[in-house]
Image (tube, rainbow, N blue to C red; front, side):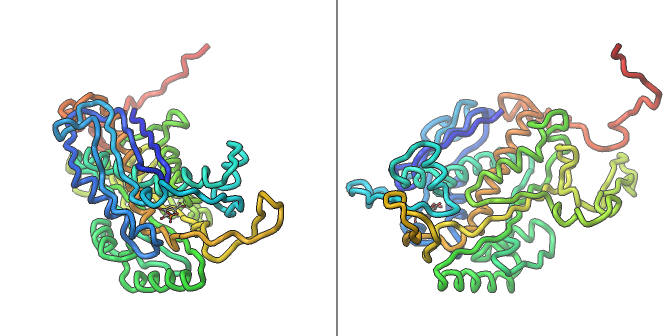
Amino acid sequence: MLRLLTAGESHGPELTAIIEGLPAGIPVSRDDIDADLIRRQKGAGSGGRMCIEKDRVRITGGVPAGMTTGGPVSLVITNKDFQSWKDRDISPMTIPRPGHADLTAAVKYGYRDLRLGLERASARETATRVAVGAICRRFLGEFRIVIGSYTVSIGSVKAELQGEYPDLFRRAEESPVRCPDESASRQMVDEIARAKEAKDTVGGVFECVALNLPTGLGSHVHWDRRLTARLMAAVGSIPAVKGVQFGNAFEYVSHWGTEVHDSLAPDPDNSGRPLVRTTNRAAGLEGGITTGMPLVIRAAMKPISTTLKGIESVDLVSGERVMTQYERSDICAVPRACVVAEAMAAFVLADALVEKLGGDSLEEMRPRYRALRESSIHELPMNNKAWRFSYE
Ligand code: EPS
């Protein structure tokens, strides 16, 4: 339903995003978008580039009077660093950095300079996704849907995650590594400092959570409509993300089925006879459809592949074994990837909401939202009689 395109290079003049398919009537303000752009730029572990860029959005289409019109929305973010690249001869880059797109992109596209791959593969592009995500978040907010995120681990330091989600989100916002556990947060800052001293990089795990989702977004009926798959693809598209799971999926494989599913029970108060789950091990999805419980996406980000210390590689001009060369680098991007994951989740959930509700405007969607079926016994009348497949 929604289409998102981004364009631009890391050190080119600007980055552009177009989102198409949003309903009319979503209030969009530059301040809301900038607030998320600022959140994406914060956090320990960033390299020198973050001192140069101060990302602010320019809205150039689709919001002529502060609200979406139903037309495509276009957004532009300036790369300040372009000023120092624009008039200079760019020295050849011929040694691919293992783990980056340098070699694979050159093989695929026949580049004669590896920088052409680097420029577009760079995570700089995620700034545009965050800008679009801020609009999607605003749209979801009209239906009380909230998205937050936090760091679970950096290197060998793991957080103890205690408390309700809104509290985790709030505490994450106060931490330099977006970690709600204060003591782990301090240790994570030290871990990043150690990686920096070793001229190396460090990865980690983060969680992105959506709250107040209605039941019934996504679908079981076809592989590409399963919300599970759509969210995995969206979060897996963030540079350096190598794994995505829902809740503790990888841990559950060592348990029996009866230990990992969320049993259903009638609401003890019997008010409207809703069905309740007292656990959320499915992390908000059953059959590729939202259950209405918190949606918990957990992702693994590998250590960034641009390292100040060299990694063995080959110079494509001489064919000699060499070490990768010093490049300006981020040490850890996990805190910032959290915010990008929020944006990607917001985009997918906005897409699923438009799909579920239809409607060209927010005004049309509101009554449809109120009419959504819930998992209460009275909303699910069963025939309770035998039937047969009617195929010959
Ligand atoms: C990136 C390399 C660094 C990062 C950049 C992503 O940029 P530079 O090569 O200019 O130092 O800072 O991320 C951003 C600029 C950003 O806004 O997130 C890479 O190669 O992926």
